[in-house]
Image (cartoon, rainbow, N blue to C red; front, side, top):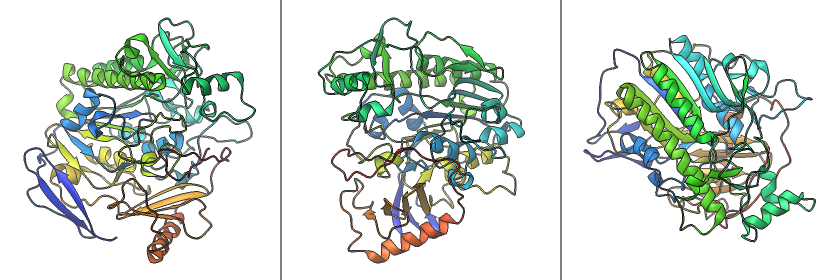
Length: 512
C-alpha cells in the first residue's frame, strides 16, 4: 500500500494523521477515550436507499438535513465511507453479514424467480442480528429487507425478533386511496430508460422528466405489501411510509429502552417511485424542476423520520449509551436524468465511480466519539458488524471470516487504525479495486487493462492515467486476483447490462 495522507479532525483538538503501511501516527488526536460502559451500548443502523453523497447538507449537499447532520455533528463524519456494490440488494447482504457478498454468491440483486431455488441470503450466513441476539440484545428491523422472499430468508428467521416493512426492493410510499399525494409515476428503474417498446406510462414518465407533463396523483395501490411480525400480517397502511417507518422505529426504542437493543431501520427513501405528501412538497416552493422538488421532499421526510428516532433516544434516556450509524446503500440513481448532483463526485448508482459506491456515513456515540470529528480514511459498511460486536463485548465465531474491522480503536484513542488497505467491488464481469489512493475500474474482469484514477489528485475521476502507469494497473490486477480467491460463483443470474452517463463521465454501469 503506497503511503498517503489522511486527516482526522476534531472540534477541540485538530490533528493531522499520517497514514502509511504501519497505521496511524497520532499528533494531538481529539477523540474522547472512555472505559466500556457497564451496560453494553444499544446499536441503531439507519440505512437510506439511493441517497447520494451530494444530497445531504452534512456533505455540502443540496437538501437541508438537520437531523441527519446532527449525527455527524455530535459524532463523526466519514468522508470516505464505502458500500460493497453500487446496487441495493447485495450491498445490504454485505452490511448485515460483515462479509463480501461474493463469499456466498449474493452478487446480483435478489428477485423473485421460480427457476432459482435460493434467491436471497443463503441459509447458514449469520446476520448482525443473529450475533447481537446471541449476545443478549433485543433485535428489530423496520423498513426494506430485499434479502430474499422465502421463509428461510424472512427477517424473523434471520435473527430479528421483530419486523415491520417490505421484502422487495421498492414499494409505493402511499396507498392508491391516499389523499394529498404528489407523485411522479416512474415505478421502476426501467421507466427512466424508456426503450423503443416503451409502455404508455414509460412514455409519460419520460415526458414528465423533461418538464412537458404535469404532476399526477398515485395511480396504483402499494407496489409491495407491508408486512409485520413472524405471522407475516399484511398491513393496509394509508399513511406516508417514510413517516410510518420513523414512528415504528421510535416505538421499538421506547419499548426496549431498558435492555440492550439492536435496531436496523432501512428506509426505502429516496428510492423511486418519486412520491411525497403535500406537506413535504410545499417545503421547496422555489425548486422549479418538479422531479427535484419531489425528490427533495422525500429526503426531507427521511430527515424528519431520523429526527423522530433521535428524539425517542433522548426521551427514553438511551441516547448516551447508543451507537447510531447513518449511511446509504449506494449512490444516487443517476439513470433518472438530472436527478443527481454532480458535486463533489461523479457517477451514481450502478456505476463504480465514486458517486456510486461512496456514500454518506455518519456515526454518533456520546462520550466515546468527540463531537465534530471528521475521518478521512477509507471505511466500509463491512466495518459495522465487527464494530457492533466489539462494542457489545462479544466476538464473531472463530470459524467466521469477516471482511471488516472494528472502528472502536479509532473511536477510543485513534491508535492502530489505518482504514482499509484494499476495497474491491464486483458485479461480474465489471470489477473495481481501490488500494491507497489508486483505483482501477475494469468493465470486463477477464480482459486486460481498465480505467485508472488517482483519487488524491482526481476525486471526480476525470483523468484516466492507465496508459502512463501500466505498472500500477498490473499491481491492482494482482490485488483483484488475490481477492477472487475468497469468492464463489453467483447464486443466480443478473439482468441485462446497461450503462448511462452522468455529469459527462464515461458511462460504465450495469444492471442486475
